[in-house]
Image 1 (tube, rainbow, N blue to C red):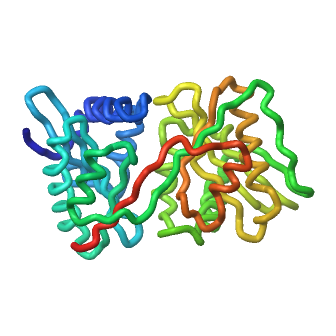
Image 2 (cartoon, rainbow, N blue to C red):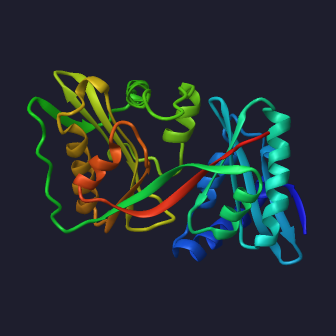
Image 3 (tube, rainbow, N blue to C red):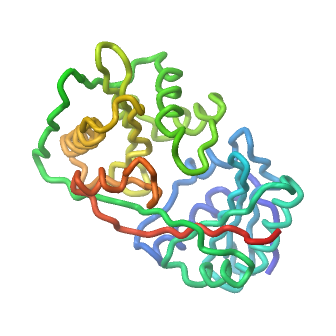
Length: 297
């Protein structure tokens, strides 16, 4: 077995590896080659350095990458062969130390990935936090929301990207480990991604002022599932039921298009009470992800 840097021509094989890993754990695909390439070609990723592959005589058996966010380096390590994981983790840690020697190391994984959970815990990491994947099954004729008095909703118009970006940054400024994304990076991840659909981005306003946003997509790797990427309510408009209304508006829109379910990811300890908002809207926890911090570096 050898570990080597990823090349752009590896993207389809790497996507299939990640999908096989996901199917074993969750019976669903994880990513399309186009989605993975979006990450590989993002402005802050060095393809020949930040993404590693484990390979044996049968092909790819492991994947690792690193991403820098704020004052931390995040590691993503996965594999279909547990024997590849220790060397992959060690190699991506070495890359992280060379790239960002003074930043904290964080790793994340599905709680069901026992080999990787065990590896983190035996490699000097501690369980620091967890997140949820939440989901709701949609019904035909999904009910429309009751909007708080004075609020209206519409889809995002062309040239409003900067306005939505600012609303997202303001909505998440009080969340765990928040770091303001550069606008160009946000555009890459949110607007230039393969399944961007302006008609699934909804803006709630009061007297012309932007109060909340819900930014959704229809991922190709899970047909029939709508995905909410961002739900944000500006602090001055909270505690009025606006988050609930935006959620239910998105549910109704996806149901009208024939989708069977809607999902999202959320920090389980989100200080804005997001988990309770989602539960009140009828969502349930489908999957738990664990977040590990390197205790010593």
